[in-house]
Length: 147
Image 1 (cartoon, rainbow, N blue to C red):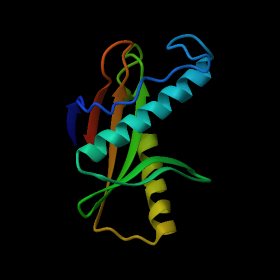
Image 2: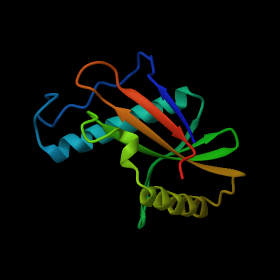
Image 3: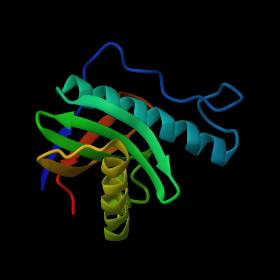
């Protein structure tokens, strides 16, 4: 497993999520978490594409769950879980993925491959943690080959 902490320097960085009321704080906790999660997935996808990966699918769902991002890196299919946090008070974003979550991600990857009829030579499970501080740029940690 390789961890690559990076901070993209692209000027196309999306603005941090606003709550339904338009402010950067306050509002419903669930709505804030959803907005933060969407923002993190968008930020992670953009970061990975800038690193040379090709985005194939996003938020793919089936009755067993959801895959945040499906990408290709050369001949390798990359199934990616994105975790976004606004602080490290409860640990880093990558610490939020348990072995059970990684196993479920493996099963979901099998379902995605079966549905698409794709047989890549290699499938890799990655994790991207996005830390969105109150001020400053988001920080990205990309962990390749989890589980």
